[in-house]
Image (cartoon, rainbow, N blue to C red; front, side):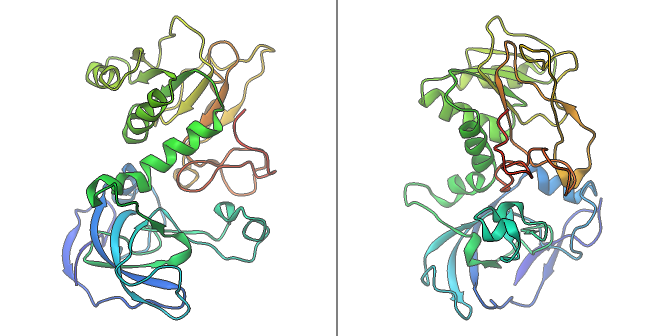
Length: 303
């Protein structure tokens, strides 16, 4: 089969002819119809995620049709259209898997990182982590929802019922969830890199009632802050009414330094669209489309 292959970090993908993969127990062989590009894919290519399987077929926002089922794979039928996200496999036996929180499994493996992904004609996926795709979406429309859409929607849910929603970082997840928030009748405040007028104009075109730099403060206090920004929030903000501060880390697999939690101007909640911190550090939030959405101590990560 034809594929795009990463053989070495910081090198372009190379076209390759690879043997056709075969589905194992509980797996599906999927004919790829579309695979979107996520910022995480670029982190992998740039060597910022240090432990990819090499050589690797990247891509984790996959839409395709089932063409073969492995032994005991009975969740989908041949020709069903499915989506494949970032979270690709968990152990099934740890305390998190056994308590319905398999998204916190410390042995988890990820599509397009430790498992070959969707930049190919065919891919194999664990049926447990495939989604049925509604007919109302075509393949290209559905693909970004497998990551950016899931990150945004989960994060918005964790933010609660607040009306004034601040969104930090206006990339793919943010621009999808801004439309959902507006559909729900919420007010959207968009925070971009300082001086990024194009992103601010884009946010306004999607219904944001205010857009500015991440170093600015809107005229109204926020009810919740959704943080997708790659550089976090400015220091000096993020105190609640009692003066407390919190911390969150972005992308555990990137080992970024901690950034201030931004409960927003006026003591709002904060919800975070990326997973966080190293395994075993209790009380740090792990959320987002990639499946991490609860504290290691079991508390929801909306502060």
